[in-house]
Image (cartoon, rainbow, N blue to C red; front, side, top):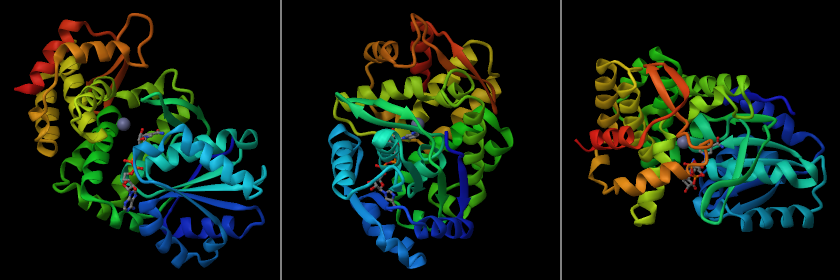
Length: 347
Ligand SMILES: NC(=O)c1ccc[n+]([C@@H]2O[C@H](COP(=O)([O-])OP(=O)(O)OC[C@H]3O[C@@H](n4cnc5c(N)ncnc54)[C@H](O)[C@@H]3O)[C@@H](O)[C@H]2O)c1
Ligand SMILES: [Zn+2]
């Protein structure tokens, strides 16, 4: 396993220049947006970056497919990539997930580097070495655990990121705070407009540290790492249900809603005080106020939760909260508890 290292801004330029100038063949994987908005910034700082071969995918989740992986492997082979070649992923979670997967099996594993350009990728997707593609319409079905050699975080890359993607990623930041750090929760609460996160590099760093710390304890997702699933068991079911009905929802919005449901479950189990539940509810709804207007069929939701890939045997296997800043994994929740919690979010 390669050593994982994260560099920020000026330090990142220094380290990235070193990599660009070494002898191995370099390939940049990006999408249409990051090619347009992010590569010019990076090559203005590191002119030799233009020597790398650029592979570009159409923007969006539809690129996280088998066909894109084949496209990249094919290009790598045609351009004579070898086992010393380096893949630089310049993009959001889609590019980082797909690029990491492609790198993990090409020539039995080549070095890759993540240069996350979306807030979601900076605080979450680029960190921790979970790589994946979607398959047969189901998210992240094929993938690997394979760490990037480096992750380079450049604050300025976020300047061109559309506003809605800040809001989406902010849900993961709130999740980090809820599962691991009450002080961080207090700090995040002060953010009124999520786009201003760009001015708070220390908050981005805090999220990265929380994720790194959890991953370091449990790389293969057997125990501690499951804390990061808070909001996701219900959130994924909400995402699937709404997508089926052709209602678009951002991943972060679904997770925000999932966190409300799972906070209520935590309260029903007696883990969370009424006061903490009220606070979580008020803070999350303050950012994601449009959530309850979406239509959700409760019965379909229960079915989807039971199908969740994180389920083991008959248990729901949900991560709950034991307070703000503390998570508890592997909790079983009955259908009626879940129904009550879902109804609570419609109030
Ligand atoms: N591996 C993990 O641990 C992990 C964690 C969280 C999310 N994910 C995955 O990440 C994906 C979501 O990530 P995402 O929200 O970054 O999606 P994304 O990569 O599709 O990026 C969102 C949009 O923003 C654009 N974009 C990215 N950076 C930009 C920039 N700097 N300027 C302008 N536009 C920019 C992209 O082109 C895209 O259109 C999902 O597939 C999810 O499953 C993985
Ligand atoms: Zn998520």
